[in-house]
Length: 180
Image (cartoon, helix red, strand yellow):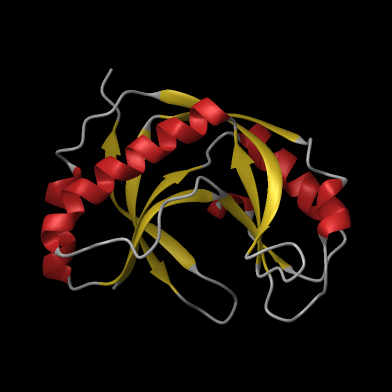
């Protein structure tokens, strides 16, 4: 099954701010449903049921404290001139905390042979772009100071992703709660 480890966006105010932003940014792209917004700490890809069980056991060993992140700033991968993805970033401290959490995930999964193919960059994908739409630098620059609110990070989840013609369907396989 296709899996990844994520931190979900659960704050309704943040989800609404993202939805408003998506509605106001006039680009030809598929917006990500507000109920699916998340930070991917590590993409695992296709793994067997047996490996899923090993991943769950490994993730349960992670200890982390709850923290908050401010969602702000927008950008595009690979770059605004040729966008494939539009994303929202974080404040500096929240980004550092997310990077540390991603490192903990990577460290416990490495012995299972699950290694990330690229360094973690704290971002939430809000649009996927299938066809060439041209340079969106101006559109993003006009929105770069948008503040999307604060999200409390109190758990990480192992998620299953089923690809369908209308988009991915995510389901939770495991949740690891922050220590109090």
